[in-house]
Length: 305
Image 1 (cartoon, rainbow, N blue to C red):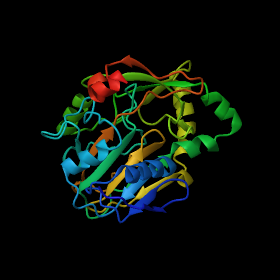
Image 2: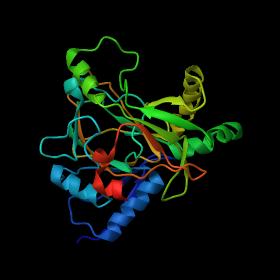
Image 3: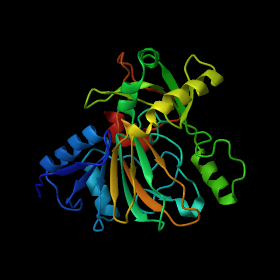
């Protein structure tokens, strides 16, 4: 086993840090893994350059050090022979994730974190931006904090990615059909208590459909207002990918946005996600599944916990 004293370099003021000179395919000991986890909770997203030695099996092995893994996705097919890996070939089907979201919040138990590896990149473009939903909550004026502290939101995977878009090519229409083949809907607190840090973070993003007790119009107006705090530049970090890069983000305290500025150029990344817990509100209530069963996605270990 390899013990490493982590070298962590912040890359923005409120979110994001690079862990330098660490080979993720090494047999890292528990102390090193615990150090990575602590840095993840502190900085919300960690970046690891030049991980060219990392392949699919070693990416999975690294992710498993942080807990049991989810399936690749609740509805999308996994990478061949790798049920834990979601292969995102954006250049192929134009299924861009160019909207602000937290991964898979349409299920009752969203992932704890996601580990993304760059496999193929365009010559320029294709950066990803992450936002700190803890600092966004802290930025809210007192009246808005009082409102959201007791507010709940319905999240769903229905009409994801392409809201308001009608001129879809046939391949992407098929992708959308698969994405929505099983409709999931969950009720989450808008403010959750982070299970490790105790911080309060906003649970919002592109899967939110409405707020409990508010009309659709009221929900849309309020969501725009709250999202404007999350996506303020001072709450974000932008990462310019290089081949071999790995990003590991805390899905409980972030949103992200994959910038679709590379046209028909290839961009392919592979994602592995760690099973999360049920979000807990300030009053101690947990999220509830309204439609769909996430047990298979989250695996037997998550169901039994």
